[in-house]
Image (cartoon, rainbow, N blue to C red):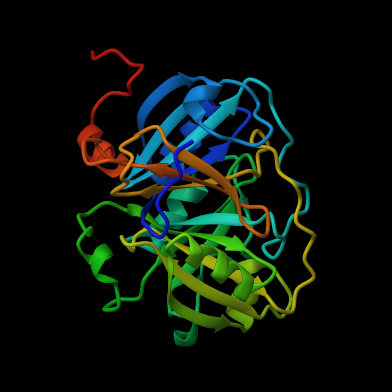
Length: 315
């Protein structure tokens, strides 16, 4: 395999979720969160690229929200279900945050859907200014994957999200947050891939406790951005919580969420070149080489918006 260039990560291109039932999970994401189906196809082990303890071929449903992509992978050989009793501070925890224009309305829409379970206590929480002043609500999808609804305070919307304010309720994915055991170690790892530290905070207090359903949390939050800053990665290091040890996840386990990064401008021009990595706490990553002649994953989302899924026939 041709080595990928170092420090050339362009963007977080896709979040990959493993599921025992892709069709069911797709219906939930459409009904509860406003995702749209972009493709529904079979993928071989070769198509899926490098993985750990592969579960064989897979059915893949590709979903879009705003400019972002989520892939639902249903392997022919089903792995382990999401760990029972896992908390927000456990090292298997990894969520992605969906930006919504109206938290109250987004929460009502979620409540009208079935199959999900709450992580947060007492509904959406408004965090203090020291923690960003955002409103947030954490929950699990029908398979146990953690998710977050996120709304910025009036007058403080980041520029990328102001540009997307087009009347939709759910606008896209802001970040993927992962639980880590050592902030410094994880920062060094992700900086070696080309991400940079864009912000830090220490989140504490009753609002954070209700958001995470943990007693007296002290959470070191580190934002790491690729060259294209949205979506980004956030490291969550819980200083005060008891965490489970990291577990070795196989690629077909439901908790084996993958972050897929695009690395641009590679000299080799081998568009199939990719690397599978595991970070210091067991989270799965894939770095995919993109070349100028390729249409990026983001462009594909925009181009296919409103189009029928790849496996569907136009009516």
